Length: 491
Image 1: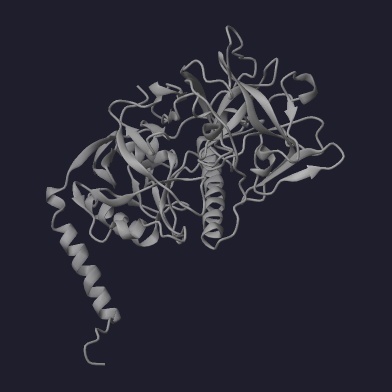
Image 2: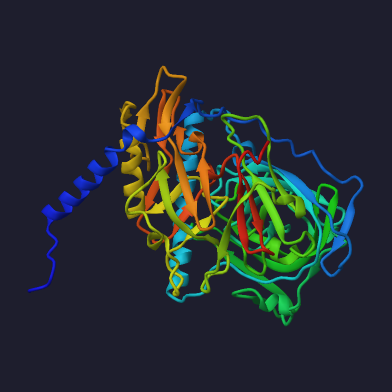
């Protein structure tokens, strides 16, 4: 046994105590910022399905090489698509956390399957050319598939519907009539027989073969697709090409799943606009038309009346963005992986949180992704515990409150309008992102209870969620293989 170090429970206790003492000794020198308290947002008004953008359309074909442009769309939260008459801020928030748990499990299971060498459940494929465009965003709170929605026109003439935006999946699809089984949505089902631009994809075409698990209607020789999600939801139908209309911009020949059997958690929206990195995602198909750049800005609905938005094109990238390189997972091309090498609390690096905790290994395990559809950031458990303990020490002057749902660090701030909280900085490879206090301390009820908006995960995969992304313009520069965070990007 000579030369070996024996680690006992006593030595572990000593190390943890030493770490706590070391960090606590710096608390008087920590950096703090003012946190202005906001209550949970009220249920939003129901969205109108009558607002269409069909005037002065500009047309772009994926096979064309002319015309660079920019377009943007407004985004909406899912709560606005299917608000309940008796919904309360607390009930909506609880539903959000339930959906979030489903989504995180789905993403973690997919990443784990890829790490084991199993094929993913998300298809891939595509084509492209060059331009710019944008849209507003609606939050998809009640969906397990994503939190935000936008209104798009599908077909010729365009029929407008709300579509989930999802950086965690690739295939674009919409519910189509006739429906074998379709979930309820706020707009009529898309009827491909009434669109002059709808075209089925042949079974032997490269586009059909780009699907992970293509099927074939042998009688019609038309390609069939199926996408399954980790929560049990799925969509099945014919694979096609169709025209999508973004306000005044029309994009032709987009590969699209026309779903006749769609079951699961997609209530409200008509389908999904996949914004992942796979070959069948919308950015991969149409990327060269908008310089392979897009960005979104998600606002905190409890603090701002400004709409969220998504922008495609050169103007999507803000000049004051803090960039970090995109990493590639050879086993799974859907997700946007980033390099995270540390976290600071109060201006002090948290001991023990190093790049090795977030490393993406050659087998495709681990890593950190940025995701629009996950709400609460999940950190691999050793990193989370060290981070949480450092924040608790820095916020020791605040009165603690009972845990809430997945949150194990909560505070009773009742009767207060503002407090001082330690700063939080995420250290990415290439740049540091300093978070506003509203991005890491959030209300969970209307009784003054606020919780630290991070959670641990037993999965090796960490996820940067949309609560931490609020207020930043998050840019995806696919041409430069980088992601940017621009503070105050929604202004």
